[in-house]
Image (cartoon, rainbow, N blue to C red; front, side, top):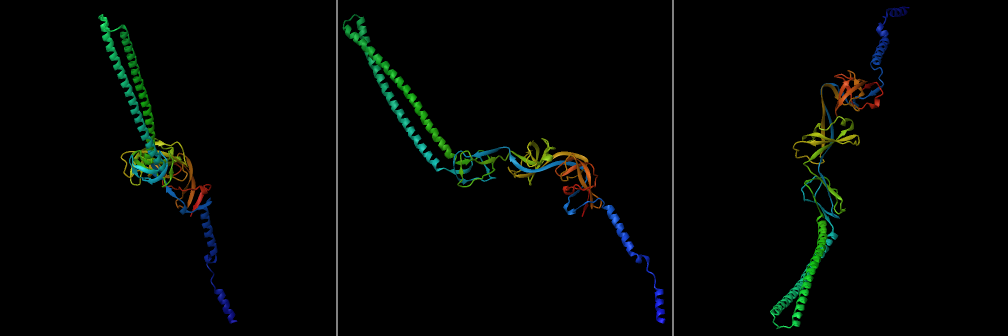
Length: 425
């Protein structure tokens, strides 16, 4: 009985547990519910999750914006001369390489053509033979003319002799002297007429022969000149086996191999003058509309900055880019050369006291675009509409939709562009 009584005393004296210990799960559930409510309120409408290390962000700032457009390209020469082969042959020597500075008359490539060298020897022999034949014919013609001139002189002498005899007899007859008979006198008259006629005929033969000799000489000279021209043509072809530079400049290409067969008229290389260079820069099609002729530019050669102005804008678009030509100004630094890779920056405008941000992907000048703005904690981004103004290669003007200090996502968001709010982890 005493044991039972003691046990009853112990049960009666046990203290009751505190409320918070007795109903601890109520507090946990309430805290969890409150956290859920706060989380749901904070992250309501979040329908997509992106990772922070995959994003590029920038802050909207206020200040002066220099609108520039940049691109890459190469220096090109305004004066480029193509060098071609004037004769056929096989490449025996290559004496110049791309990038070499050459002067007018320098040999670039030597060709070999044994048949052409043989043709030259044959042409030289033929010309020498024609020249000897022409000289021999001229000597023979002059000899014949000399004989005819001798005969004409003898005929004149016979005529003068007979004329003297006739004059003497005529004087005797006029004085009434009957020393000579009438028959002898008339015979002398006939002799004078005969010698005179023969003299005239001989003079005509001399004239005709001289005319014929001159005509033959002209014909022979023409044939000899033709042979000389043919010889000179072959000499020129042999000389053309040594392909030379026509101007001073830099060799642009030399895609030849030893033993390669070269045809007449085939292009061998091109030479660019290094003193008249322009920069041909590729600019994105979306940015080229802001560029105008005469705008100032700076060309970066990696070693120097060269001032220039926009001189031409190509009307065609290739692979989303437009070629803009920049004329280089002032004394060019020594390292510049044709085909040198360069970067250029063109000054389009200067906007004082405006808002701007690094240019988001797909952002277009003077257009409305959607962009995501981060909250203060940087863990949520809401899609907003922003109106842009002028754009450069790296920055774009913000006309409305964002304030200074707003942090925007500028990387490509097309994968989740249909979601108004995204969570950033």
